[in-house]
Length: 208
Image (cartoon, rainbow, N blue to C red):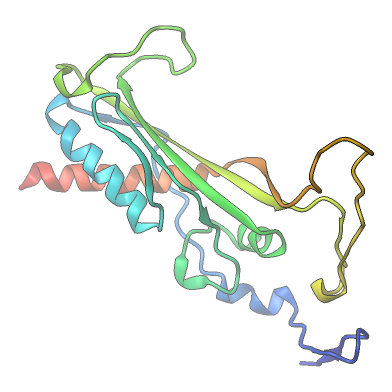
């Protein structure tokens, strides 16, 4: 492997091709259901299993509403190809995306009456802990990427990147823009893995 030196102040810079590091980006399974059905008797164990599944992937719980059937997490950084032990990427391509751009995920678990269209205007149930019919669990995992206004990224090395000077309009009273997060979309493979984990935990709890 060759090593190159940055032209900026003679700083030594080791650059390894991403292709050579690809085997390090351990890939997780992308199989699993898009939704799971939970009996009324299994709701409590399914809710606890969802919280534990999120915790096992590094998410802290930001909202836990057992009566409303909603669990929301804080964000956690997505694993790069240099963090294969996290195992949260479904493919090498996904690992490369998280390496090139600093990205993070957050998750939302939502229980609702089975057969209810999530996009409908039908009101939900006030208290799912007293609901006597089957429930359906869906998960939404969203991905966000860090963005810094004025950043001019080098295609060769991040050490050669630079930032443009952004001057706010006169008398605007607005501070200079800093880093912000841009929504990219959903990670459906991660959603299916989480649902599979909850389903397995519910089955195991029912068998005891």
